[in-house]
Length: 70
Image: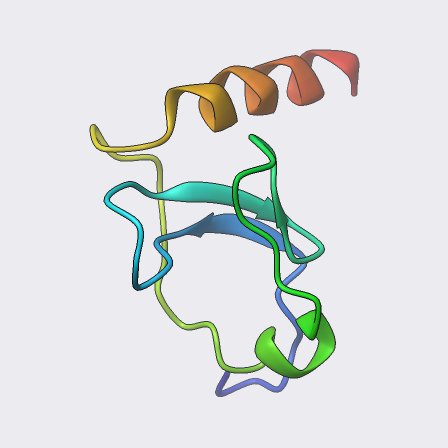
């Protein structure tokens, strides 16, 4: 990433996924996607978006629950 910050969390679409998923520390909230080399990958992820209509429904629901708890 241009500012050398690691991705903490955000929406991202893995190349083989049909949907965007919400990632926290290299793992999607739905549990379908994970990256064991997260520290290396986090600097390469640039496709972060705001929630879209093609987001993973499970990730979206879990994200809402996370935000209510805060």
